[in-house]
Image (cartoon, rainbow over all chains, first blue to last red; front, side, top):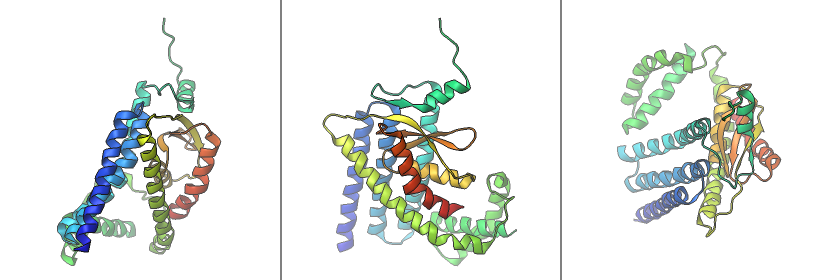
Length: 118
Length: 164
């Protein structure tokens, strides 16, 4: 009974964080800032949902699988964010106009200067 | 050979968790299948370095400490980004900065890059070719030295303890 209430509470917190991640995806200015929202908040949101499943069903096969899924999300979501942002930068997606510094762009240009457009 | 046994045990445990029931039958089944999974991907595992069980076991306390630091940082990161998202007017100064790292091994660099992504306000984008700089996108990049210093002090020493 008390575990059930606890599980529902964690489910609501997790869903709230998933909602915040989607809000961040819509509101933040460019692809890198959006990835901040989806990787960090999305991870904790999904983790909360999976934890609530574990609390609801206990250590039955379903609960153990939910915990495994949560751990795999925790391990893989930073790698996905890293690859997306790297691909975006290499493809020429610029930073938003509020940005103050871009040392990666400088390093890339130093390694292989872009041909001048005319 | 020792390396095969250690990795097989880890993969067998993962198999138990994916299957959902943790018991001795599943563990032995995973232990039998695991070498056939490890063999094709041998290049991904570091087979050249010397390996010993006692060395691997002695790192476990440091890894638990690292996990604790990681969980605290994840929760802090979520609260920070949630605050930014919920502001009525988004006022951020993002930027990409170069952060020097001391870690040299593949596992250490992977661990620190993923840790940086999960911690407040920073996101790893790439590593320089000579493996001593990480390019990090920070959501507040007005003070590049401060960000680099905080990564070095708060995270890197735990990663060095746990994985090297």
